[in-house]
Image (cartoon, rainbow, N blue to C red; front, side, top):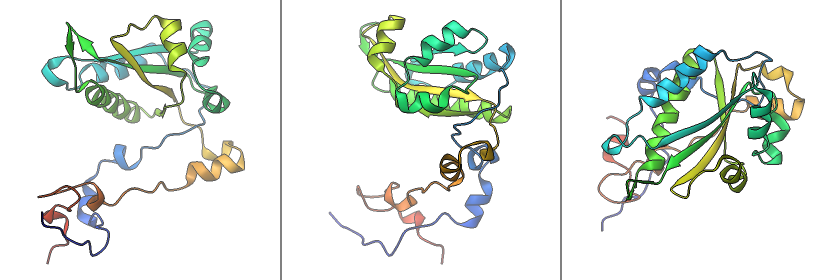
Length: 210
């Protein structure tokens, strides 16, 4: 197996950066939201965007448990499934969700169910961005509690929680959280995950043009 030593991290060139959509460069995962409800039509548009996601064999393995603050009892029930670290800030979100993937369908294992469900969430995220909403995905949920409270069958798995709402200005946060919110998030260089002929070997097209 041939190997190639990296001369240094490959940076995306300015032309490629300029081609990125604002919904991608502007996406963030806020922890503070305005005290403003998300109306039914807006919420339905997000879920419709998810419904139109791509999936292997059109299996559509995504499922969403959704609670809006317009229904306080349902919202509190879903809020109780968040771990304490997320409960400390997610109380301001107008909408909470838990994303659930279908693992088996008709006796068949869906090997791409998590991937497909992620694609649906990508659609939902872009639709939210287009309307001025933002969301934060949360790995910190009590999956056993979610399964018990909502009767999720063994053929399905809760993947993550989602807090969604109209983003509030970062300066409304305490100073320690404000600094974290505004801090640019590091991204791995392309040559650490885009490979060519061999695993771990950067794809040739990543190199700077002569």
